[in-house]
Image 1 (cartoon, rainbow, N blue to C red):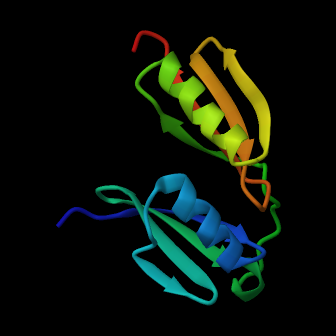
Image 2 (image 1 turned 135 degrees about the vertical axis):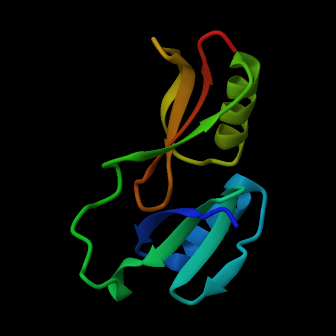
Length: 123
């Protein structure tokens, strides 16, 4: 069995964040309680949303100190995903922009965690 890798984001309102990520990922959580939700990102990679009030030791970092990055196949897919965010009224903090690593846009979740979609250079 392949070991799993977990990314955990501490969130203020687990239900709100779970709804946000369920829509973002197009999938329901595989595990959910009032204080926690778990999503499968890819085989062996999981995203956990944990209510920060129940974490011990207490987290000290706020959202925005890191980001989740999702690779898309091309610039058109980045533009299409950006248009979906705008149409749903989700907060975009940087419109699609050409960068040295590729074409990308950046949004934030309800807790200020950054979410970047990008098409790497040469894809």
